[in-house]
Image 1 (cartoon, rainbow, N blue to C red):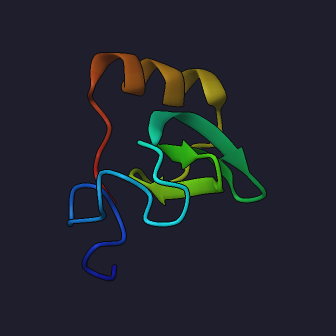
Image 2 (cartoon, helix red, strand yellow):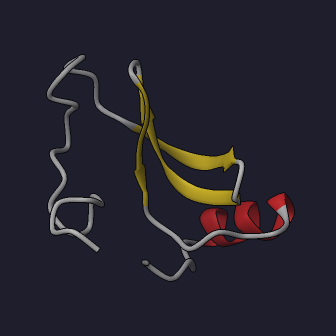
Image 3 (cartoon, rainbow, N blue to C red):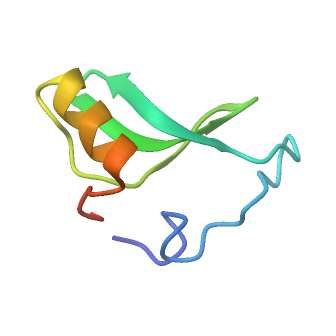
Amino acid sequence: MIPGETLLTGAPLQCPDCRQVPIMGVYESAAGFYIGSVCACGPYTRESPYYGDRKLAERDFERGEWLPR
């Protein structure tokens, strides 16, 4: 992982392009579901490994129990 690639490793707390504070949540990509953030520009960070099931990702997000990648 590249330093600054996630919020945990130092990504700016405000998107440098759209100046929006990214919104944390469970999102989907072609690789699966993940806990991360989005801003007005689109996906901003992926904070967790991929999940194969949305409900498991949502449960971990709600509990704050995901493993950082």
